[in-house]
Picture 1 (cartoon, rainbow, N blue to C red):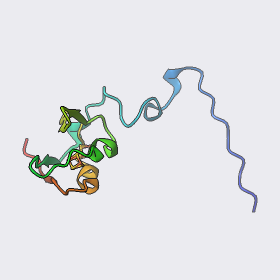
Picture 2 (picture 1 turned 120 degrees about the vertical axis):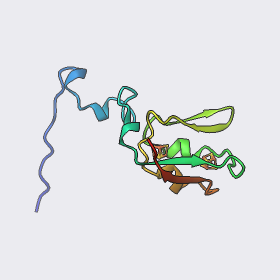
Picture 3 (picture 1 turned 90 degrees about the vertical axis):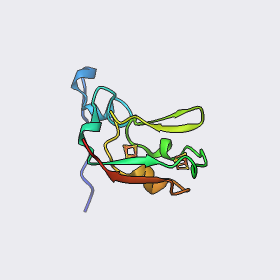
Length: 98
Ligand code: SF4
Ligand code: SF4
């Protein structure tokens, strides 16, 4: 069976575009931290400053400050990808207390 021909989608302006393709991850105007019910906590005594958590975080939620990764909880949605990818296993996902 021949694959269906993809339909061309035309956007007339930036406002027509789905928000997810306007920038990497969710945009900074979406405070995705409100979605979180678990939060990442980093143990700096074990961190090797590799930046993998920053690289894999799907939100603008990890910033590298003076070589250390710092979580911005306004944007962290608690997905746990950083903890999964951390080679030093120094990120624990703990229950959020609001
Ligand atoms: S849990 Fe980690 S990877 Fe997921 S959004 Fe928060 S900081 Fe980013
Ligand atoms: S992935 Fe883990 S070891 Fe690497 S910078 Fe982030 S917290 Fe540190």
